[in-house]
Image 1 (spheres, rainbow, N blue to C red):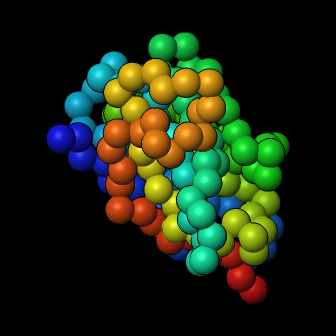
Image 2: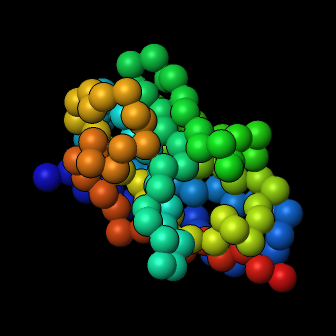
Length: 126
């Protein structure tokens, strides 16, 4: 059972920045991909970004392209989500999730992920 822990959420004004961190137990070599998802109140959980461990390919939801950047630190086994130019509609609980194996062509398929963190709240408000 892998342990996934997110951190870095908080309250930020529109236009501000936050960096989320995701720590997954074991080595990044143990995973096929690590992704960020979010869920706003009364909304379905949606994919935000994902990084594939084998070649560092990255994927983004259209709503965050150009504003969010996913990256990883192999030495520390941490995956980051740098979020810039935040908007009120980015307000949500952000979850990190890991996939042990390939799960199809849709990187944002929540059913392809094996382990989930408990989430960290991001609130964008003035």
